[in-house]
Image (cartoon, rainbow, N blue to C red):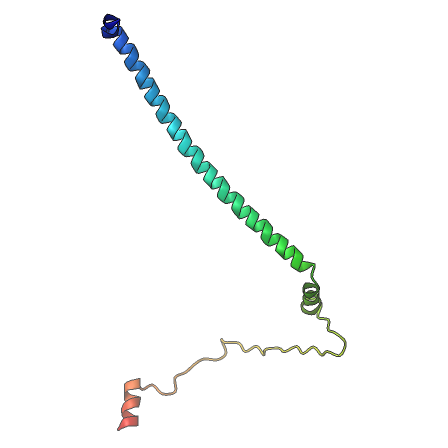
Length: 118
């Protein structure tokens, strides 16, 4: 038996088997890392989607409430309750290109302070 293990063909065959096992283990490790990475990305995506669904459900529940309906009636339809008055204010438009800002005093700040102090 000792002579069989010392034979060059046996040593080459055992070495080839060991090398194949090492390569196979390395590839399995890489696949495992890749799978773990993909799983974590999918879990994060699932968490984000579940959070989005929860937000949409909350928004849906709010849209069914009387407060939301009243807000829509008041803001978009401009309706009011009996006895209320709607006041609508407008801001007058002033074109900024017509008005030019001209400095009235061209003195520097230092000169102005000197004049005030002395």
